[in-house]
Image (cartoon, rainbow, N blue to C red; front, top):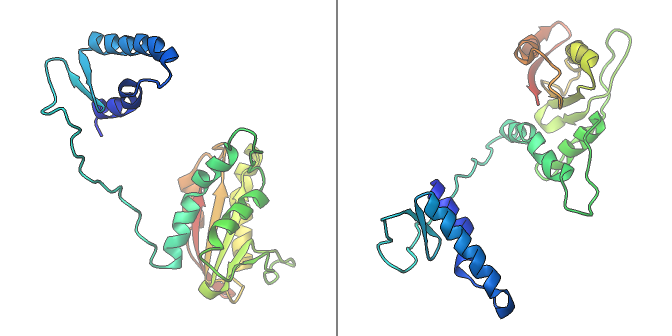
Amino acid sequence: MDSLTLLGNLLEEFMDLPPKDPEYLPDWRTKRARVDAVLEENGLRYFRFGRVLPQGNTPEDRERPLRATTVAPQPAKPSNVEELLEVVVRGLRRAMHPLTHRRKGSQPLYFGSEYDVQDLLHALLRPWISDIRPEEFTPSYAGSSTRMDFLLPAHQLVIETKIVRDRAHAKRVGDELIIDIEHYRKHPECNKLWCVVYDPDGLITNSPGLKADLDGKRKTAGGDVNVKTFIL
């Protein structure tokens, strides 16, 4: 849409529909004349039905032109679970926005912990994936075990989430994930590990380097796992 079409759409209702109450007509006429004056100062003129044209141009007819029906491009429907997960994960920040900027009188939500991010991710995945197992324990590594954030057993895929809390944590989040990878690769139902790092303040200084260190197939005698990292 070009700028004049956008401007015309914004002005149309105000310019074409006078108020029904006669009391407000004088004020409306004054404001309408002011809009006309501003348009004229900028070499433009308003025509009925939301048409703004350069001065000297006139619409070809006085009736509202038929607009071609346009359909906004829609994202392709995911063909497999990994395509679905990529849409959901990459869209997490967009999904947070209407929840953190709610309507007046509604309590806004705050995504300040890993549990907050996990709950949102879980809610977005539940309509699509029937078997999601949160907090599944992993086999022991170096004398300790840990809990997975989400195990999708039908797809042999694990999702691990991290939230960067401060600059010190930004420096060690990669080390935390390396340890997690060692735990997860030993789980019999974990062939793929997706690491989702939410960095709201942009404290990770070398995101490409972190991804390069983590991504790819990690193969050892204890098991294999394919790692994919997202830094939001």
